[in-house]
Image 1: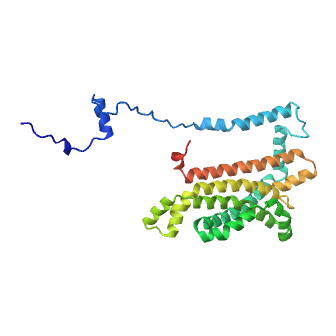
Image 2 (image 1 turned 120 degrees about the vertical axis):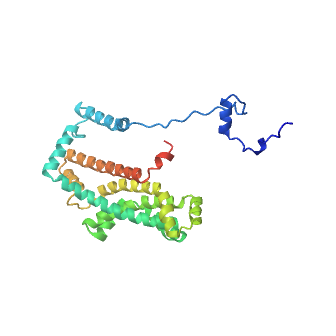
Image 3 (image 1 turned 180 degrees about the horizontal axis):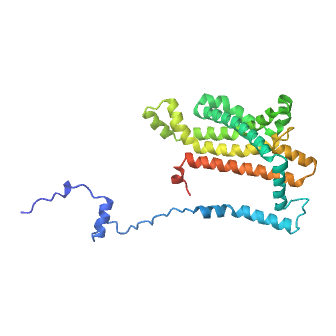
Length: 298
């Protein structure tokens, strides 16, 4: 007499078990399925990345040399790279360029710190609470429509011509990008994540500090990146207000004496300021959000 089968007591086989059976020659019913190829993650070496990033700036530099040294563009319209380098050396030796750079950088950073700090606080208040949005958002949207350059005459009348209107102009120009990105980032945090954190007993303060703001950090840093760039643009305008030191001071003197090469050097220094600011923000993004490398689309 044959013993009764106990196959019904065994746990069901998983797909991996079926695959093993298929390799052994059994029929699992999944033989028609094809395993998708593993997707390799594309990564570039540091040397290749640097060479790719320097391709366009190098092309611009080559075109600049070609146009100036070849006589296509007059030196009265565009100075050559060698003239720019010699002018930069002369400014460093005879016009205290290092001191002028520190003055301009201090103005820009102080105005940015005030504007970005205010934008972060107002944006968090608007995004976290309904009453904050009702009180803050409408006035901020109204002020955002006012070009900050149009306020220069008013700032001069209200604050004089010393450092205060310069810093205030930079702060006003940098508050809006941080406010908008912080408010939007906080408001668009996944509601399911917030509800799960509440189930675990997080208080409102810890919920904002440990869940909402970290999840909104990518958009907040995007706003800071925009604001740092705008702070350089506002610095150019601010240093036209009776500046007695700084890059704008050198530029105004060069304009009075028709020194095109000095003006060109000052413009390039503003560009360098902007590039350094952008690189620093991207470095902060890399250090504070290392997990983004695993979830980004590229």
